[in-house]
Every structure is written in C-alpha cells, then in structure tokens.
Image (cartoon, rainbow, N blue to C red; front, top):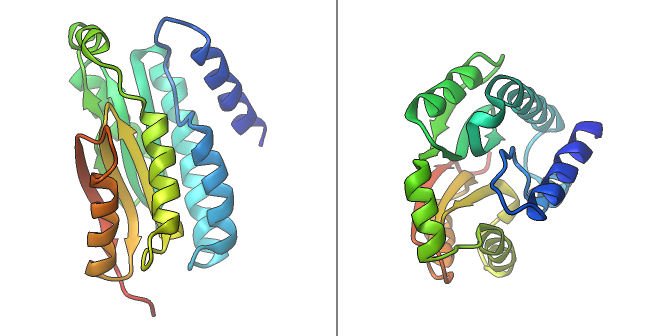
Length: 202
C-alpha cells in the first residue's frame, strides 16, 4: 500500500511538471480497477494474489534498474502472463525491461509492447497533436462496463499515444470481437492490439 501511494504521488507531481518524467503504472484508473478486479474476478484468490506479487516485483525491479531511462512503463499481469507497455527512447531499454521481467519468479509469458519513441519523434508528436491516453483508458472502462456480453473484470487495457493494447481473458471469440469493436470506436484510438486469451469457463 505504501508503494502504491508513492507511485500515485509521483503521478500527481509529474502532471504539474512540464518536462516528461519516468512513470510506472501511474494511471489512477488502473489502481481503482485493480481493487475491483480482486473482488469480483472469475479466478481464485490465490491466482490473483500471485499476479499482484509478480506485478509488485516487476515494478520495483524496473524502477530500480532503469530509473530515468524510461519515458513510461506499465506492467499488467494476468494468470502469470505479463504485458509490458509504455514508451522508451532506445530499443536496448525495451529489451532490458523485458529481461528484468523475465527474471521475476513465476512469470510464464511476456508480451513486450513497449514502444520505442526517440526524443526527436516524441517532441515532433507533441507539436503535431496531443493524445490523452488517460481519457482513452477511462472511456474504455466506461464503455466495456456498459457493453452487453463483455466480462470487463477479465480484461486489461493500456493506451500509449492512442495505440491501445488489450490483455487478459475472453470467455469466447465473440466476446473478444465485441470488446475490440468497442475500443476501435473510441475517438483518438489509432490502433488496437489484442493479447487477450480466449478461454471458456470451466
């Protein structure tokens, strides 16, 4: 809990500072959603606890090892699979983040979706058009909650520069198709990448 408070405090500070700062999973919507998931997900409490333990270890290790080398990195864990998202300025930092994650105990599979965005391209993008990923993520949360036939608690999502990455579990191919369709319809979404497993109940 103390670590979570620290990250949310850093997020508030970064928002008030004009220069970009390194971030690890700073979206407050993610913290709220995570608390809800732990209560209602269609999984055992032991499985959820193991995922939370892995996420905490990844977060700590990436922060300690990479520090200011990252623009932003998020780690989502579902059934011990990990999806890394965010942005870094060099490809070797992306690979280093994956290597650090692979070294964490009980990690089964890694989807490394971290984007490599050199500082020149990042500055150009800021001038050409700003995409508010936090707004996109909150809209995904609201629309998937309202979507019939989508079990939102089994899904994870991240937006990076308008590119959305879906993760978690769908109970059927139709459910996944519906979730992707909802996300694609949101203003500001440039693309959708799905790393969602289709696994029926039972």
